[in-house]
Length: 126
Figure 1: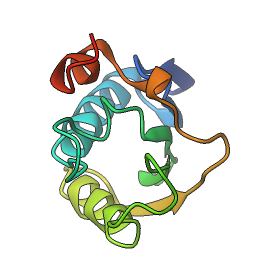
Figure 2: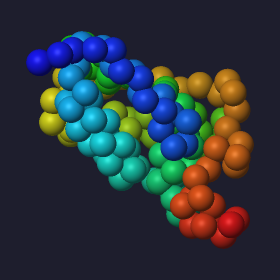
Figure 3: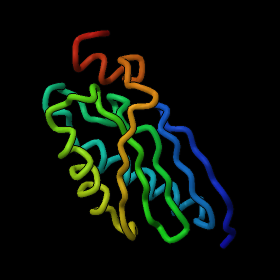
Figure 4: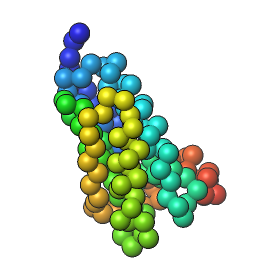
């Protein structure tokens, strides 16, 4: 099998990076990780956090450790302490993932411009 460094840009600007993982394996992991993250919803907005643009970066390391950099719609979000755990739990269910680390950032701050069309439709902004 050929191994290579692969970087893909997700539709909502999240970045996926992996090295020494085959293209097929990276594609499967990427699809499964995104699907897992899409099961996490902001309780105040009827759209998943991926489509809302709350996921800034996803790194898949050589050992299949997944590191997620995310934000919230506002720093004072009532689930700020819980949502990273929800993401960690969701991603940890993906077959082949060896572990998950979720970090929060507010730089840059989230804006509605990060939302996908799907999310804009769900909240009635499209």
